[in-house]
Image (cartoon, rainbow, N blue to C red; front, side, top):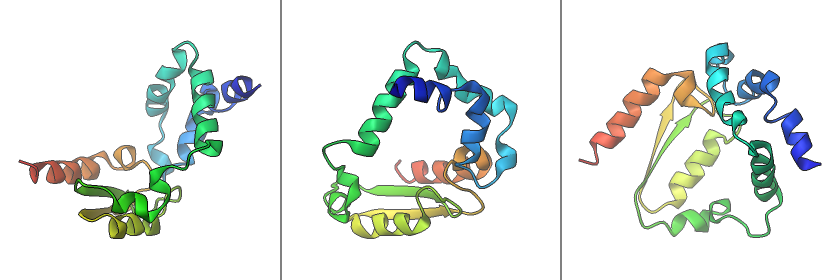
Length: 138
């Protein structure tokens, strides 16, 4: 039943653009060409079942994720850089600030004018900021 539900909603090619639009602030970036890229994995056998398994684990998994509490981030040993859209309505900028405050060595880079998927909403901005982060690792 779960696989049928996912196949008729989450991996239904006719709904790809609709779902992408739910994650972006700038809906004009959801073009047919971009939606086609996101549809490619749907051709792989058992994708709907795998997505259903992931969704169940995400929503009702037995073990809480370490990322669900500030203590989970406080235990990180490595530096953490967050690239976050200021218009993200899926995981809010407030959540980003809380994560950055909890992690011992962190930096938050807020990307203006984009939502949850900044790499498709403003690829040039995202790439500049990502390259800037990577350049500091040299």
